[in-house]
Length: 182
Image 1 (spheres, rainbow, N blue to C red):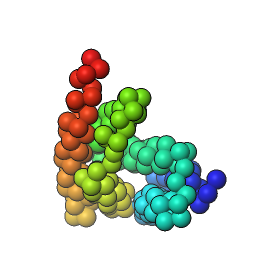
Image 2: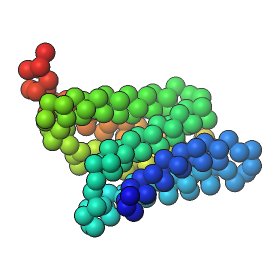
Image 3: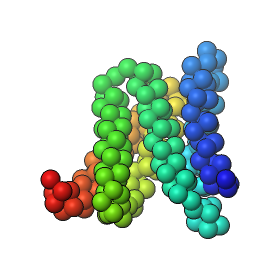
């Protein structure tokens, strides 16, 4: 167990805390939930940075980091789907969650074929993750209908478009290997 892995595990522990904060019937619950989400987002960047800098990358960390990220994003999106109760927010949320499932399965399949590097994280994947985190932070922190929350919705749509773009890139890169195995 090293500091990067502890940070990743902390992100998983934050998930039930996020849910509890989201539902607390007090005026400060949403800003504090957003703050916790922001802290989780920072640990997502920090654990990878420290693992590389301190040469502490482990197979456990390589497995758990994307799982923690996807769980945190999926739970935040699910909470926001309920909060907004609107198809225009549900649509990008489902695109993002669906893509994560598809790409996780694709990476697992490619790893079984010894071709995991074919679907390694790209710059567009990192950029869409950053936009997702910003959008979710804004949507958690500000009440629906406020100008900043609407900026969060717009950012979520851009993240959803980048999500589709990156999924197409990953599928295109993997297609030669996938089509041979049919």
